[in-house]
Amino acid sequence: EQAVSTGAAFATRAVHAGHAPDPQTGAHVQPIYATSTFSYGTAERGARLFAGEESGYFYSRLSNPTVRAFEEKVASLEGAADAVAFGSGMGAASAIALTFLKSGDEVAFMGPLYGGTEGLLRGILGRFGVTVHDAADLNDLKRVVNEKTRLVWLESPTNPTLRVVDLNAAADIAHAVGALVVVDNTFSTPYLTRPLELGADLVMHSATKYLSGHGDVIAGVVAANADLSAELRLHGLRHVGSVLGPFEAHLLLRGMKTLPLRMEAHCAGAHALAEVVKDHPAVQAIHYPGLPQHPGHDLAARQMNGKFGGLVSLDLGTQEAAWRFLNALKLFTQAVSLGDVESLSSHPASTTHQLLGEETLARQGVTPGLVRLSVGIEDAADLIGDVRQALEAGG
Ligand SMILES: C/C=C(/N=C/c1c(COP(=O)(O)O)cnc(C)c1O)C(=O)O
Image (cartoon, rainbow, N blue to C red):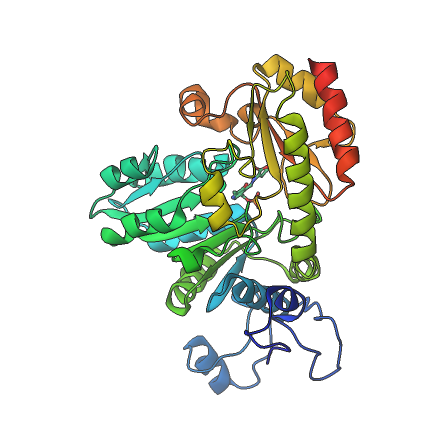
């Protein structure tokens, strides 16, 4: 049983949900069950387990006690009935796609999405007869969805332009045609946004990012109701098999215990940084939902519980200016990924979103001058100082 009731506050469940002292040994931290298989004792019990007539562990591709603790913690924080862990965010995304889509179905999304996700939808699924629509806004979304639309796929804020999507409104449009709503909650985390409360059916994460928080694990997870989770586990794990290991689950369990504290620090640092650099002459545009001039500011204030995340994107005008700036940073590490306690910086058009191609990049606002800053939990004055000196160097 869980050490803490579901009624406890978020920060209490971040620490305790998903595990209790081990009943056999009293171990206070969830043990790492480094085992691929489990003895089930008798042939009769084995048959019952495989028939789903009895619950229990029998093979770690399907479930493992350490991984299960991670799934239960995610389900608790997202307010979901259940969650299914995968070996990466793209493992989670591909499990969703392969579980719920078939040839002839359609998918609508409001871009940009993470480059890998768009590559999955347009590239792989396109070869299997799935039609994909990139809707420019809610009106366009309403226009493109139809009776063949099976999934509406959303991020908010979006990677990398930090556009804020009205999840509730998009969910209403999707449900009007009977589509399922997938929200990739990687950038917000459940500390800021709980998409299931806004109408989403499936909430996925690249747990590599803020959920882990320490840049030491690649992982994915999907939270949903019991039926959708059961389908995901059956098809997504049993048949597709992007599995999370118990060592990674242990790192995630440890990282998630400080999620609230880390998100407060990320948001404070990003907000302070955005306020300072927004008026710098080298900055042609700044994308941060916490700034009043951000087109989605009021929506973000409602949808993200008054915080605005740890990502800030700046447009410095040209790729040359962007690269000069990035090369001049000293405290921000030039690396892809985000949500680590260490600050990271990248140039999406030539890295994480490069595969989208010129036309899509231009349409989705991923400009050649765009740099993405994942603001860590270092001292905000140090981070601001680093960005300012790099803007001077790059200017
Ligand atoms: C290098 C990776 C980046 N992102 C990844 C990512 C994934 C995919 O997640 P795995 O990388 O498979 O855990 C899914 N969903 C979102 C919103 C993401 O940002 C990056 O942008 O820097």
